[in-house]
Amino acid sequence: MLHVRSHNYPLLVRRWERAAATAGLEMREFAESGGFPIHCLASVPSRDERPSLYISAGIHGDEAASTEGLINWVEKNPRLIPKFRTLIFPCLNPWGLVNNCRLDPRGRDLNRCFNKSRVPQIRAQVKILAHSRFDLALMLHEDFDAHGVYVYEVSGRRPFWAEKFLEATAAHLPHDPRRSIEGRRARNGIVRRKITPDLMPDWPEAFLLHFAHASRTFTIETPSEFAIDARVAAQEAVLDVAAQLCLVSQRDPAGN
Image (tube, rainbow, N blue to C red; front, side, top):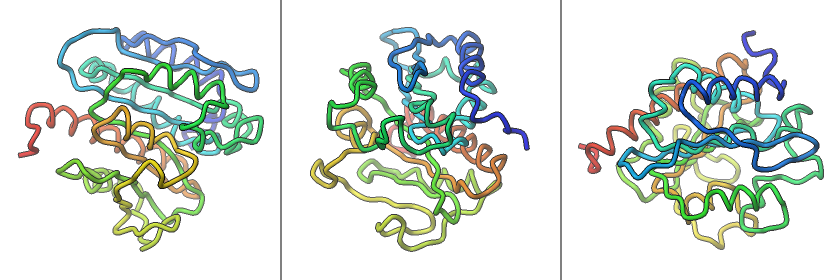
């Protein structure tokens, strides 16, 4: 087991401090929850034409491969990160991570709070996002019911990318073969659908990104009952492919 300390939040913060300095990211505390500081990392502000990338992880504290995969990927790619204008939320629920709990210390599912202002940390996150646009937004998650990796892709922007993500994860984990995932039609590990603001009364993070901030929006789900080393590797594989697709798309928007 390579990731036995994946629920150690102070260690995660120290790793991010080192990684931020190496990759040229600014790290700051923007909120607090359950006695733990919550951080974001961003590229130094500029008006250049680099592709823009949004990544978040750890909004559910019992999904440790998301936070571990993200920090591993940034640590391994200090020369790649500066090719993007980047905003990263590396662990949105540190209390949940430490306690291996999906919810926050007040029993709230933070991923159902993005169209409401009742949660201070969500208000602070939304404020950071104000007036921002991203070429790609990735929300990294896990699912204890999953039979393999699956991807939510909000349809609309072509060519689609979810197939590429699952090709990348195949070396580490199978895709989820179910035809219905969370009550939604799935095919070969992909849930691809159009969404409207009234589809859910309580918005997940992906809805806010799709409607207000991102050209492409994906939620990545690895199966949390599988070995953590494989799950972390799968998360990293998605990030590798996503970064390359984003760079190629900037050079050739038509995807030729």
